[in-house]
Length: 201
Image (cartoon, rainbow, N blue to C red; front, side, top):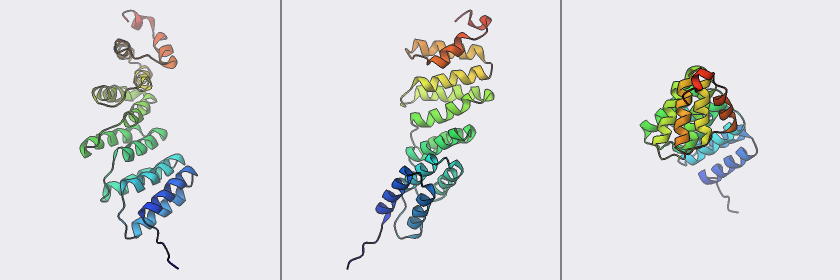
């Protein structure tokens, strides 16, 4: 009887199934089989494992896996970065997400809207991060990434959290000129600015 040996394709499919079932430990287990085997690891296999860890809220393991990719011979793609950056956003590691965004540029990987959003939304919670939020938002505006109102709203809210009212108003006005609508939360934040800061808006 012929016995079919599992290969990188079958292992990757199994890892993806583990991600859907929230079984991140099994996903790591099957990834290790590829590492120890004769098959060449690829970004697809790693991405499936990264996804499994993110879905399970295992941001620490996600960062470890990403570091393994960076140290190895596996070329990271946009999905590798965006998945890891999503984990950073969920865990409040906006500085790490920002470093990964810079790393994408160095690696020649085009940043996606998800990657930009991970940094911008992470900055929203930190009053001291308003400058980074605006900087990344401007990069996003200049890129080919699809711009969505939630990204801009997060940048504006990061300014309000840092009490940078004038910058928030200026950015809000710029978005209005670009025909981008603010969501209800951001609009409420803008109209609640101190009266003196709204006089020229």
